[in-house]
Amino acid sequence: MKNITAKIQGGQIPQGKVKVSGAKNSATRLLAASLISDGTVLLENFPTELVDANYKMEFIRACGGEVTVDSDSETVEIKPENLKDLTLSSYDYPIRTTYLLVAGLIKRNGIARIPYPGGCKIGTRGYDLHIMVWENLGATVEEKPDYIEVKATDGFKEGHIDFPISTIGGTENALICASTIEGRTTVKNAYISPEVQDLIMFLRTMGVKINVVGNSFIEIFGKKNLKGTIYEVISDRIEALTWIVYGILSGGNLIIEDVPFETMEIPLKHLEEAGIDFYRNKKNVHINPDCLINGVIQPFELATGTHPGIISDMQPFYVLLGLHADGISRIFDYRYPERIKYCEELAKLYPNMLKWEKGAITTFGKHNISPNASKVESTDLRGSMALVIGALLSPGETEISNVEMALRGYNKLEQKLSKLGVRIEFLK
Image (tube, rainbow, N blue to C red; front, side, top):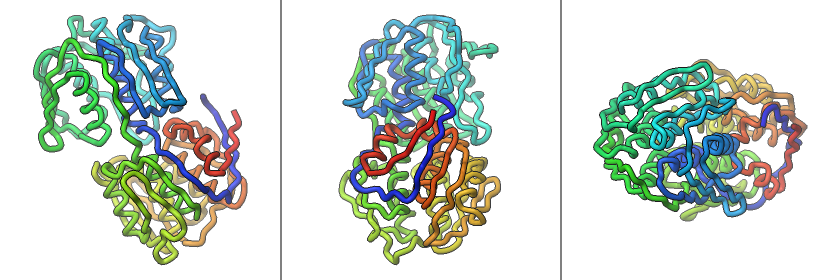
């Protein structure tokens, strides 16, 4: 699914309920981790329409695994027993986390051939730490023209991994690979985000013993034989924030269901400090115009970083808030300082209201602003969704090219907007 253009008529006011889907950054990892099971795995609350997830399912099927999707019940069933050592005719799979597919293939075949990682271009995000994981666990790695080849004829061996920097992807890879080893593996300088914690809980249901000390040390006692399981994916904290910000800026009346409050208390605290008083119960948030205490969004300063703070994926939505605030706001991104390319496109909707440089974005907000309709181009997943929201807030018509970037991270986006009375036309 490439080169999709969205034609958006702005000024549509959302009304109704929207349910937050299972987390993209958890579901796609659990899908890969399912391949090390010796039984059937059923994943519930799975975002079945995500482009990223479907590319990964295609690759698993091409390698002999069985994947059955039920979009209505939002479940995915995985039967990995027949994964084979195959050389595919094509390795053109634009999946960022291809490296997580290695463990299941190594377990059954002693060799894994995976596509080179793809994904959003938001700065240097190499795969050297993944090579380190495989080599520390006894494998050899060769970078072929079309794929990465990992060999461990007798499976991975227990070992010790000490990451030079904190890494989510490396932590996930180490967890999945180590879970196949009959022995003790330790991981230092791990990054335990809510999605990594979800992966740990999932692996435990298959019979892996995992001990976590503090927030950066993990001890894994894997097993040769891992049982099948039924597991519910956590709700997506980034999607939840997206709907909350859209509800605030649109002046709509939204009930956002299945908000994972336990994973986003600090991001929500920053909204409160910007003068936004939303209504909530245990699982839901109610957004309406009365949420603005003084009738305006207060300007703010914040910095992204690691969980439990505001993560970099949330950055574009605070930039949107800043553009509609009553004054100058500053957003700093120390985790991915090069996540600024989308600003050039967003500035076409908000001319002369945005200044950016590596690691720092300044917004010159006006609380009664309406963005100008324009033609813009998606640059990355979250930046693309910020453009979609900006276009929906504009009084005119906007065209967004390559909007499939947003579809990579937002499950059933068109259907959810439609239920809120908001229509987007997608031109393929």
